[in-house]
Every structure is written in C-alpha cells, then in structure tokens.
Image 1 (tube, rainbow over the protein chains, first blue to last red):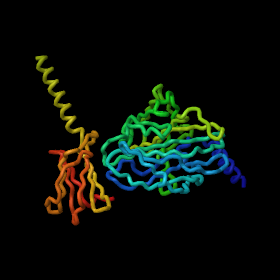
Image 2 (tube, rainbow over the protein chains, first blue to last red):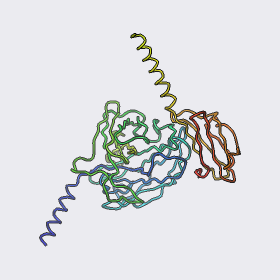
Image 3 (tube, rainbow over the protein chains, first blue to last red):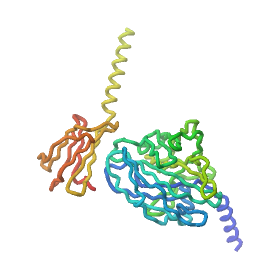
Image 4 (cartoon, rainbow over the protein chains, first blue to last red):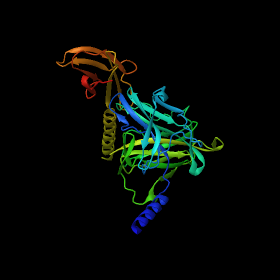
Length: 272
Length: 107
C-alpha cells in the first residue's frame, strides 16, 4: 500500500511538473517532396507535438461549441484552390487523450510547388483564458521543379511565415530561414517557438517512441526571436518534421471579448 | 610570370563557373494520366526555367515512335494513351534526357 501511495505521489508530481509545451496546429502529410502527381493525406490536428501530448478539439469556443475551419486551400503558381469541402472530421489519439481533428485526401496535380494552408476557428484555451488561432502552412513539391515556394499565400491568410530556404529539400544540419509576416508586412522581433514531431504519426494517432530523447524537460520548447525585419533562422539537429510558430503575429486582437493570439505556423520536413 | 599565373587563374575560374552553370540545372519531366484516355507530361529544369519547345517522343516497347511533338509554352505535352506498354522521352539535348515509363504514369 505504501509503495502504491509513493508511486501515485510520484506520478502526480510528474504530471504537475510536466511543462506546458507549445500548442501547434499540424498540417501533416508523410512526404513533402513527391516524385509525381498523386493523392496525399493531410492530418490537421491541434496538439502538443514534442510530447505527443494533449490534443485539443479544433475550433472549440468557451462554451464548448466546435466551429468549422475558416480556410483550407492550396496555392499553385498563380492559382488558388479552396479545399474546405475535402475536410473530414476525425478523432485523433495522442499519448494522453483524444481530440477532434480533421483529415483530407487531396490530389496534388502539376509539377512544382503547392502551398497548402489551413486556418481553424479560434480555440478557447481555458488555462490562459484566451483564444488561440494558428494559421498553418506547408509546401509540397511535385517532381522537383521549383515554382512558387518563396511567395506568400497572401490574402486571405492574415499571418504567415514565408520561407527563405527551399522548404522541401532541407537536410539535417542545414539552416532554415523564414520571415514572419502579418498582412504582407514583416513582424519585427516576432517571438517564435520551435516544435518537432517527436513521436511518429500513424493513422489517426501518435505512436509511442521518441525520435529525439528529451533528457531534461526544460530543454523544450526551443525559442527564437526574429530580428527587426521579422527574419529568423534555425539549424536542424535531426531529420523529421519541424514546426515554427510565431506567437501573436496578428497583433492585438480580440475574439468574443477575450484576447486572441493569432499565430503563424510553418512545417518543414528535414531529410537525413 | 605573375601575369601568366594570373591569366591561368582567371581562365580556370571562368571554366569553373561555366561548368557549374551547365551542371546546376537538371532536366525534369513528370507525367500523369488524366483518366480520359489522355496523358499529360510536364517538363522543366531544377533552376525553375521553362521547358517550352523541348522535343517529346512516345515510343512503344520495341522503340517504334508512336507520337512526336514539343513541349508547349506552358511546358506541357498531351497525347493519347497508347494501348500497350510505352515510354515517354523528354529530350533537351545531350545530358538532358529524361525517360518516363508508361507503367509509372498514374492518376
């Protein structure tokens, strides 16, 4: 019995001391560099990727009502496609809970760079009594021909991170650079959190197994500040999917009378 | 003597850059099945340049030419899907040839 109480206390201490790793909206797909036109699957999950932890219900307000996503689109060369109708609700299982998320099957057609972006309805974070809305994007290339990866999505996406490095051919040890923008203008000194899909995604769940061992919990999340021109850089220590989130890139905003943090997120796949 | 060395250096440098430019762009060709009995091939180069005007050939298994043409101004080439096995050849000159097997061309 004593042992059980001790174990329970230890577990409680562990849970209480578990750091609040960053929230990240994913736009996950297994491969960012495709050899040819074809169908791909996206998982749009609002989660804590480092520890494959607590997964939030996308678009849930303070009353517990789920609101549908605002944008899900693709920019290819000069054209923009609306993919909102392709979104299907799923339940995503993290290592600690289940949350409401979406997936989509999309045919990525045409040689070149396809910028996919997603903007959910604001999510109410009770612990901070505020709303969070993460505008996320990733760039999928078909057949190696570079076209528009360096261009912003622009309107209607209010905030975004524009890459300064071809984002689908980055290798372990390479440095990524990007610019945080709001309404097309750089966000000076933007605060950026860096995340990593540390437990692989299989189906609609995280699979237990750290790709990178976190020897001390305070070592994550990684933080960067952009310079006065909104530019930042980061050198990848490991292959896999890395995410950058510029917190509050949208400036001082309100939603339902509460603070709204409108964040810009980009996901980049690193090869080894 | 110094002048000769300097000249040689410049020549080497120019040669180096010329070689780099020539090898920096890789020819690219990717095809997909439109699902209506036609195939679309797209071409380009890894530096983002257009493949407009590049020679395109469709051959059967024995090497017999089934269709011939050129990439259009959008770097695209459309043709009727052959009944049997085939391959597509994108020919932008020596060292810049890409072959795509028909069986790898899907929707």
